[in-house]
Length: 260
Image 1 (spheres, rainbow, N blue to C red):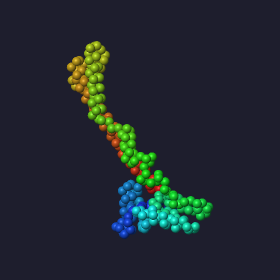
Image 2: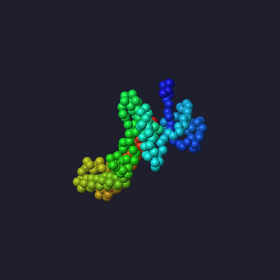
Image 3: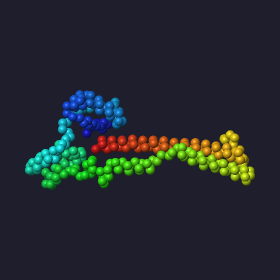
Image 4: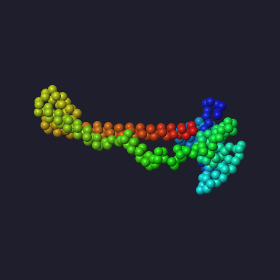
Protein backbone atom coordinates (compact mmCIF):
# COMPACT_ATOMS: atom_id res chain seq x y z
CA UNK A 1 0.00 0.00 0.00
CA UNK A 2 3.07 2.25 -0.25
CA UNK A 3 4.13 3.66 -3.62
CA UNK A 4 7.83 3.73 -2.65
CA UNK A 5 8.99 0.10 -2.78
CA UNK A 6 11.89 0.86 -0.42
CA UNK A 7 9.45 1.61 2.39
CA UNK A 8 6.58 -0.18 4.10
CA UNK A 9 3.66 0.64 6.36
CA UNK A 10 2.90 -0.94 9.73
CA UNK A 11 -0.21 -0.71 11.85
CA UNK A 12 -0.10 -0.85 15.65
CA UNK A 13 -3.19 -1.47 17.77
CA UNK A 14 -3.51 -0.03 21.28
CA UNK A 15 -6.52 -1.14 23.30
CA UNK A 16 -8.16 1.37 25.59
CA UNK A 17 -11.50 2.80 26.65
CA UNK A 18 -12.96 5.90 25.07
CA UNK A 19 -12.02 8.92 27.16
CA UNK A 20 -9.23 7.28 29.21
CA UNK A 21 -5.62 8.50 29.43
CA UNK A 22 -4.39 6.61 26.37
CA UNK A 23 -7.40 7.71 24.30
CA UNK A 24 -6.77 11.37 25.17
CA UNK A 25 -2.99 11.25 24.54
CA UNK A 26 -2.01 13.63 21.71
CA UNK A 27 -1.31 12.06 18.33
CA UNK A 28 2.36 13.10 18.33
CA UNK A 29 3.00 11.41 21.67
CA UNK A 30 1.23 8.23 20.53
CA UNK A 31 3.42 8.07 17.40
CA UNK A 32 6.53 8.46 19.55
CA UNK A 33 5.26 5.70 21.86
CA UNK A 34 4.78 3.37 18.91
CA UNK A 35 8.28 4.12 17.56
CA UNK A 36 9.89 3.44 20.94
CA UNK A 37 8.06 0.15 21.41
CA UNK A 38 8.89 -1.03 17.89
CA UNK A 39 12.55 -0.37 18.63
CA UNK A 40 12.30 -2.05 22.04
CA UNK A 41 11.01 -5.34 20.65
CA UNK A 42 13.57 -5.22 17.83
CA UNK A 43 11.11 -5.00 14.95
CA UNK A 44 12.49 -1.72 13.59
CA UNK A 45 15.09 0.91 14.39
CA UNK A 46 13.79 4.12 15.92
CA UNK A 47 15.60 6.31 13.38
CA UNK A 48 14.25 4.36 10.39
CA UNK A 49 10.63 5.24 11.15
CA UNK A 50 9.68 8.31 9.10
CA UNK A 51 6.21 9.25 10.27
CA UNK A 52 2.96 8.03 11.74
CA UNK A 53 -0.70 8.87 12.13
CA UNK A 54 -3.39 8.00 14.66
CA UNK A 55 -6.94 6.69 14.13
CA UNK A 56 -9.25 6.43 17.13
CA UNK A 57 -11.97 3.84 16.60
CA UNK A 58 -14.99 3.82 18.87
CA UNK A 59 -16.74 0.54 19.69
CA UNK A 60 -14.03 -1.53 18.02
CA UNK A 61 -14.76 -4.63 20.13
CA UNK A 62 -18.09 -6.20 21.07
CA UNK A 63 -18.88 -6.17 24.79
CA UNK A 64 -20.66 -9.20 26.26
CA UNK A 65 -22.94 -9.07 29.28
CA UNK A 66 -25.38 -11.38 31.02
CA UNK A 67 -28.25 -10.51 28.63
CA UNK A 68 -26.11 -10.58 25.48
CA UNK A 69 -27.66 -13.64 23.81
CA UNK A 70 -31.24 -12.64 24.57
CA UNK A 71 -30.84 -9.07 23.29
CA UNK A 72 -28.89 -10.16 20.22
CA UNK A 73 -31.60 -12.65 19.29
CA UNK A 74 -34.12 -9.79 19.10
CA UNK A 75 -31.88 -7.91 16.65
CA UNK A 76 -31.19 -11.05 14.63
CA UNK A 77 -34.88 -11.91 14.26
CA UNK A 78 -35.60 -8.38 13.05
CA UNK A 79 -32.76 -8.18 10.52
CA UNK A 80 -33.71 -11.58 9.07
CA UNK A 81 -37.02 -10.06 7.95
CA UNK A 82 -35.13 -7.62 5.66
CA UNK A 83 -34.56 -9.14 2.22
CA UNK A 84 -31.92 -6.63 1.08
CA UNK A 85 -29.95 -6.42 4.32
CA UNK A 86 -26.73 -8.29 5.17
CA UNK A 87 -25.01 -8.23 8.58
CA UNK A 88 -21.24 -8.74 8.48
CA UNK A 89 -18.13 -8.28 10.61
CA UNK A 90 -17.73 -7.70 14.33
CA UNK A 91 -20.03 -4.73 14.53
CA UNK A 92 -22.66 -6.14 12.17
CA UNK A 93 -22.91 -9.48 13.98
CA UNK A 94 -21.78 -8.17 17.38
CA UNK A 95 -19.46 -11.16 17.58
CA UNK A 96 -15.80 -11.31 18.53
CA UNK A 97 -14.57 -12.62 15.15
CA UNK A 98 -11.00 -12.95 14.02
CA UNK A 99 -10.07 -10.74 11.09
CA UNK A 100 -10.26 -13.61 8.60
CA UNK A 101 -13.73 -14.59 9.80
CA UNK A 102 -14.90 -10.99 9.63
CA UNK A 103 -13.70 -10.79 6.02
CA UNK A 104 -15.29 -14.16 5.28
CA UNK A 105 -18.72 -12.87 6.35
CA UNK A 106 -18.30 -10.03 3.84
CA UNK A 107 -17.38 -12.45 1.05
CA UNK A 108 -20.32 -14.72 1.85
CA UNK A 109 -22.65 -11.70 1.96
CA UNK A 110 -21.56 -10.74 -1.55
CA UNK A 111 -22.29 -14.28 -2.75
CA UNK A 112 -25.72 -14.07 -1.13
CA UNK A 113 -26.49 -10.93 -3.12
CA UNK A 114 -24.84 -11.69 -6.47
CA UNK A 115 -25.17 -15.47 -6.74
CA UNK A 116 -28.29 -15.99 -4.68
CA UNK A 117 -26.68 -18.24 -2.10
CA UNK A 118 -28.24 -18.63 1.34
CA UNK A 119 -25.17 -18.43 3.57
CA UNK A 120 -26.03 -17.98 7.24
CA UNK A 121 -23.59 -15.25 8.29
CA UNK A 122 -24.54 -15.63 11.95
CA UNK A 123 -23.02 -19.13 12.01
CA UNK A 124 -19.56 -18.11 10.82
CA UNK A 125 -16.90 -18.73 13.50
CA UNK A 126 -19.07 -20.60 15.97
CA UNK A 127 -17.13 -23.89 15.80
CA UNK A 128 -15.66 -25.08 19.08
CA UNK A 129 -12.07 -25.10 17.81
CA UNK A 130 -12.17 -21.30 17.62
CA UNK A 131 -13.37 -20.85 21.20
CA UNK A 132 -10.44 -20.36 23.56
CA UNK A 133 -12.22 -21.91 26.51
CA UNK A 134 -12.61 -25.26 24.70
CA UNK A 135 -9.61 -27.57 25.21
CA UNK A 136 -8.48 -29.56 22.20
CA UNK A 137 -9.48 -33.25 22.36
CA UNK A 138 -10.87 -32.72 25.88
CA UNK A 139 -7.44 -32.09 27.39
CA UNK A 140 -7.27 -29.32 29.96
CA UNK A 141 -4.61 -26.63 29.75
CA UNK A 142 -3.02 -27.95 32.96
CA UNK A 143 -2.80 -31.48 31.57
CA UNK A 144 -1.36 -30.16 28.32
CA UNK A 145 1.26 -28.19 30.26
CA UNK A 146 2.26 -31.32 32.18
CA UNK A 147 2.62 -33.30 28.94
CA UNK A 148 4.81 -30.58 27.43
CA UNK A 149 6.98 -30.34 30.55
CA UNK A 150 7.40 -34.12 30.61
CA UNK A 151 8.41 -34.18 26.93
CA UNK A 152 10.88 -31.35 27.43
CA UNK A 153 12.29 -33.18 30.44
CA UNK A 154 13.11 -36.19 28.27
CA UNK A 155 14.56 -34.16 25.42
CA UNK A 156 16.56 -31.69 27.52
CA UNK A 157 17.52 -33.89 30.47
CA UNK A 158 20.00 -32.16 32.78
CA UNK A 159 23.22 -34.07 33.48
CA UNK A 160 24.27 -34.02 37.14
CA UNK A 161 27.84 -32.76 36.98
CA UNK A 162 28.98 -34.15 40.34
CA UNK A 163 27.49 -37.59 39.69
CA UNK A 164 29.12 -37.83 36.27
CA UNK A 165 32.43 -36.58 37.68
CA UNK A 166 32.43 -39.15 40.48
CA UNK A 167 31.45 -41.97 38.11
CA UNK A 168 34.08 -41.15 35.51
CA UNK A 169 36.68 -40.50 38.23
CA UNK A 170 36.03 -43.89 39.80
CA UNK A 171 36.35 -45.64 36.42
CA UNK A 172 39.63 -43.93 35.45
CA UNK A 173 41.08 -44.32 38.93
CA UNK A 174 40.32 -48.04 39.14
CA UNK A 175 41.53 -48.53 35.57
CA UNK A 176 44.94 -46.96 36.27
CA UNK A 177 45.13 -48.78 39.63
CA UNK A 178 44.37 -52.16 38.01
CA UNK A 179 46.74 -51.69 35.07
CA UNK A 180 49.57 -50.71 37.41
CA UNK A 181 49.08 -53.81 39.62
CA UNK A 182 48.87 -56.11 36.60
CA UNK A 183 52.08 -54.73 35.13
CA UNK A 184 53.87 -55.05 38.50
CA UNK A 185 52.72 -58.65 39.00
CA UNK A 186 53.53 -59.76 35.45
CA UNK A 187 56.69 -57.71 34.93
CA UNK A 188 55.74 -56.44 31.49
CA UNK A 189 58.80 -54.34 30.69
CA UNK A 190 57.48 -52.62 27.55
CA UNK A 191 54.30 -51.44 29.25
CA UNK A 192 56.24 -50.66 32.43
CA UNK A 193 58.41 -48.14 30.60
CA UNK A 194 55.36 -46.39 29.13
CA UNK A 195 53.60 -46.20 32.47
CA UNK A 196 56.66 -44.59 34.04
CA UNK A 197 56.08 -41.66 31.67
CA UNK A 198 52.90 -40.85 33.60
CA UNK A 199 55.13 -39.74 36.44
CA UNK A 200 55.89 -36.62 34.41
CA UNK A 201 52.24 -35.60 34.64
CA UNK A 202 51.35 -37.25 37.95
CA UNK A 203 54.07 -36.36 40.48
CA UNK A 204 54.81 -39.28 42.80
CA UNK A 205 53.36 -41.94 40.54
CA UNK A 206 55.51 -45.07 40.08
CA UNK A 207 54.95 -48.50 38.64
CA UNK A 208 54.82 -50.34 41.96
CA UNK A 209 52.23 -51.18 44.58
CA UNK A 210 52.38 -47.81 46.43
CA UNK A 211 52.32 -46.08 43.03
CA UNK A 212 49.12 -47.91 42.10
CA UNK A 213 47.29 -46.16 44.96
CA UNK A 214 48.72 -42.82 43.86
CA UNK A 215 47.52 -43.63 40.33
CA UNK A 216 44.09 -44.42 41.77
CA UNK A 217 43.96 -40.94 43.29
CA UNK A 218 45.20 -39.17 40.17
CA UNK A 219 42.83 -41.17 37.94
CA UNK A 220 39.89 -40.24 40.13
CA UNK A 221 40.82 -36.54 40.11
CA UNK A 222 41.32 -36.50 36.33
CA UNK A 223 38.07 -38.40 35.69
CA UNK A 224 36.12 -36.16 38.04
CA UNK A 225 37.39 -32.99 36.33
CA UNK A 226 36.62 -34.38 32.86
CA UNK A 227 33.15 -35.64 33.83
CA UNK A 228 32.21 -32.50 35.75
CA UNK A 229 33.51 -30.25 32.97
CA UNK A 230 31.65 -32.18 30.26
CA UNK A 231 28.38 -32.05 32.21
CA UNK A 232 28.66 -28.31 32.85
CA UNK A 233 29.52 -27.63 29.20
CA UNK A 234 26.70 -29.81 27.93
CA UNK A 235 24.12 -28.28 30.29
CA UNK A 236 25.26 -24.78 29.30
CA UNK A 237 24.90 -25.60 25.59
CA UNK A 238 21.41 -27.02 26.19
CA UNK A 239 20.42 -23.93 28.18
CA UNK A 240 21.65 -21.62 25.42
CA UNK A 241 19.90 -23.75 22.78
CA UNK A 242 16.60 -23.59 24.69
CA UNK A 243 16.96 -19.82 25.02
CA UNK A 244 17.53 -19.55 21.26
CA UNK A 245 14.53 -21.80 20.53
CA UNK A 246 12.38 -19.73 22.89
CA UNK A 247 13.49 -16.49 21.23
CA UNK A 248 12.86 -17.86 17.75
CA UNK A 249 9.40 -19.05 18.83
CA UNK A 250 8.61 -15.57 20.12
CA UNK A 251 9.76 -13.95 16.87
CA UNK A 252 7.87 -16.51 14.79
CA UNK A 253 4.70 -15.87 16.77
CA UNK A 254 5.19 -12.13 16.36
CA UNK A 255 5.63 -12.53 12.59
CA UNK A 256 2.43 -14.61 12.41
CA UNK A 257 0.56 -11.94 14.32
CA UNK A 258 1.87 -9.22 12.00
CA UNK A 259 1.10 -11.30 8.89
CA UNK A 260 -2.39 -11.94 10.24
